[in-house]
Image (cartoon, rainbow, N blue to C red; front, side, top):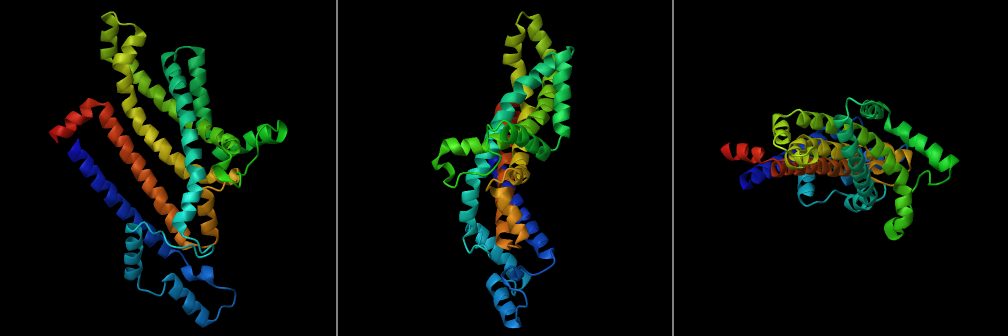
Amino acid sequence: MGRYLLRRTVFLLASLLLAASLLFVLLRLLPGDPANALLPMGATPEQIAAARHETGSDLPLAQQYAAWLGDLARLDLGTSYISKLPVGEEISARLAVTVPLTLLAFALAVVVALPVGFVAAHKADRWYGALLSGFSQLGIAVPVFWIGMLLVTVFALKLRLLPAGGFPRQDWAEPGRALTSLALPVVTIALVMSASLIRYVRAATLDVLTADYLRTARAMGESFGGAMWRHGLRNAAVPVISVLGIELATTFLGAVVVESVFALPGLGTMLVKGIAEHDYPVIQGVLAVSTLTVLVIGFAADVVQRVVDPRLRTRLGRS
């Protein structure tokens, strides 16, 4: 297991290096110069030269690339062209909204999807099992922004139970107001995510229900619940863990849509604003942090799979 963790860590670092390199190249392929964000209309050649020197875009690409990697190694994401604030500090402030939004939505989706997916599989021959499967298909087909607008219309505009958007200026100094502001966005994301998770939980449970080892355990006198707990749960959990990692990463990346619908000052809103203002350090910083988060989530899901399933550890030892 130690050798596996070492290999996975090396792979994680190599993936981050590759992603950082691709990010640098793709941003440099965009039309225009990063210095344009600092220039007024009708800028003089002297102003253009000064702006290019300030942003470093007058340097050869190789030097710009080396400087970008060197800053990343020091965890320095640069300074915003517009706000003149360190990008790392701005990202940290925005993560105080995006991370709770993602984790709360993920937790709610898991709490809903696990029992519903199990019932949809165990009672697949009943009308309500088919109904639950149909609802999960419908939830996947409906766009997340449409669900968000529907919830705002019902719970904010008509019933006036929850705010339609925004976040307290004091952030988490008032936890009650902060959680209330996140209620509708969390439910919006959780509904879409749980619909997808229900399908995977149902499929994994169906595989277990038809497995020989479960039938053997039942034939030896174990109850259905006991057989599922002792033999079925771990086998069903292995593929679901992988899907959970993917869903968590997708939710983190997809927060940009929900944050825009609910006007939340999170990482997604920061990225949209950076793109609109051609603020290259902000764009690079947000994408780098998002990429690192996705890679770490994938790493953690892979490790948990091997902890849960001894067969994977055995194969690892033989390899």
